[in-house]
Image (tube, rainbow, N blue to C red; front, side, top):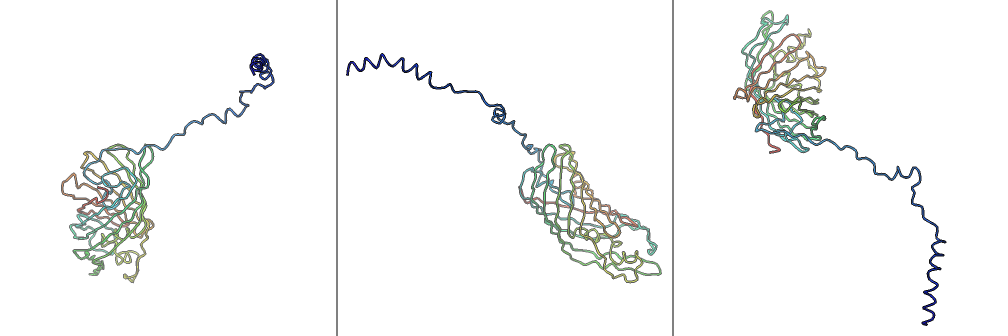
Length: 302
């Protein structure tokens, strides 16, 4: 055994050299085209982060009657929102009309007396980024009641048109809203709603009652039904000269509606410390300037 071990020691180096010569060299070069496919692809830019703004103590989830895409005090995050709103149209401050069937062409200090109690529930489905607007979808439920009868219209030949406005009504509509801050103190909003909201506008003036519309159209039957479309565009802006004193303006534009009414609500409540607002209602053949009070309470999110 001793001799065999010495023989293996002498023979090992030549055998190892032969084995090294027999084994072919392994190429480490990468085939053309394969190198490009195995290289790490550049990372794509992800979505921009949600914009962050200081929040105050007043809700930014709505201007006056219509919502914005924000929830609560302007929290920029996906989630649910719930608001309660109360608006009271006191009456007409001043108005004009050009109808040939009316005696008085100017009207002022007429009582309207309409309460609008609403609940607004929304889901913010998109946050606001550097360029993208915030987007929300929601529904509104509104209960309207009167504390004063609708004013009559004095017509020619001692004719009085009695506008038959119901004491109570309930309305509902669905909407989609977009909101974007162009500046930390200035935001714009717009959207589209489908439902009963245009009917609320028609209840604000006796000149938009079905009796008055039929008289304007020359219909002998003043009780004939008037079809009011359900679609409406809305929009507006809010300016924050102070964090808790927003000033806003909203416009409500029913689409394809008879007499083409448009309602402008000017939000001055926090500026005047009385929640007093001004509304301008214009329609084919006349316009009204009205005063109102409005209170919005944000329930969700806190």
